[in-house]
Length: 136
Image (cartoon, rainbow, N blue to C red; front, side, top):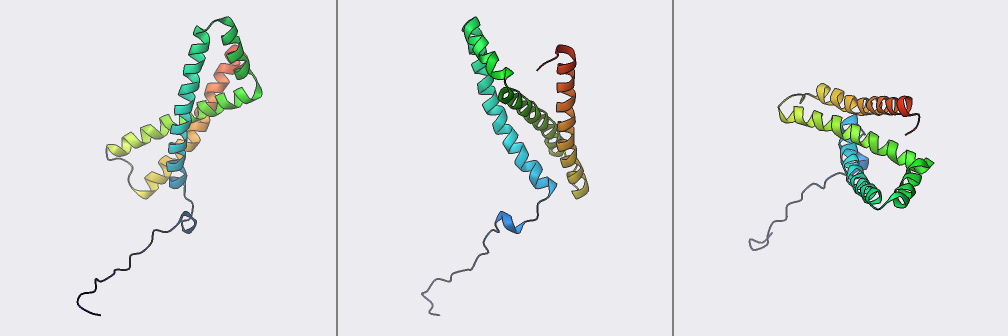
């Protein structure tokens, strides 16, 4: 090799997701990002509902009809689960920012707590709503 030629260093390529084995920590991170996006879109829908409410009884009735259908209930259920998951996982991140839960077993445990806790919190919330008002 001549002295004037630059040396090219072979660098390793970052492995693709197919190389990694799925773990709960990966799912927890991905779910946190997805639920944040769902909450942003849901906030826009909430603002649209407020505008419909301000627009008068006809506009509000049309908006309420959309939410009372099967698709509307699925969207409400999904939004409430996203809210519960993002809340619980956000508290988990706050605790980690404070220096707690960095060992691998703690990290795995807190990931499962976020996932299972959000399902339980959503079920309890919907159970309270349905038992008191009979519908969502």
